[in-house]
Length: 122
Image (cartoon, rainbow, N blue to C red; front, side, top):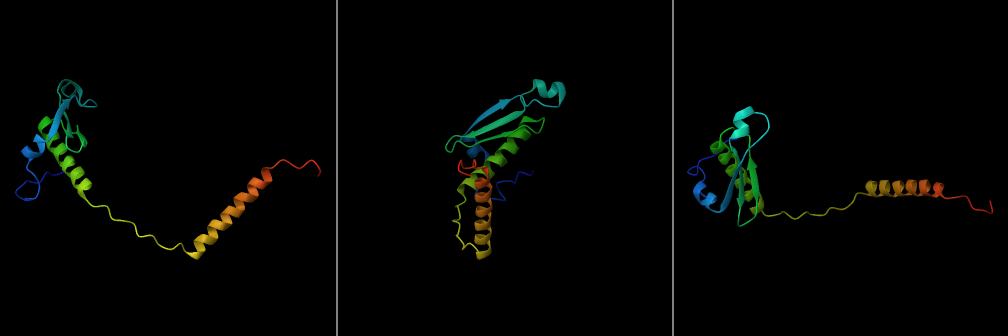
């Protein structure tokens, strides 16, 4: 994953402005990596306070690299949230599909009818 510089994308807030809106937590990443990973707090969790979006990065052994990864993920999550939802255009159900549904309903009804207890007068 590459983190693009702000000069290449002028409409994005720079890292400092985005980090000012976030709560930054560091933690021990855990997992494979031995003593280094068990002793250093290289995992980064960013919580964007205005929206409540939380992202985590713990891939790298470097806290600085994990912070950059978390910032990129936060930007992606904010862009996804800002994207307008496109309404679904309902389409007509094809005749063949209606026929399949009715046939399946008939088949299920037959199975359920077969489960009934026999009547006493039979």
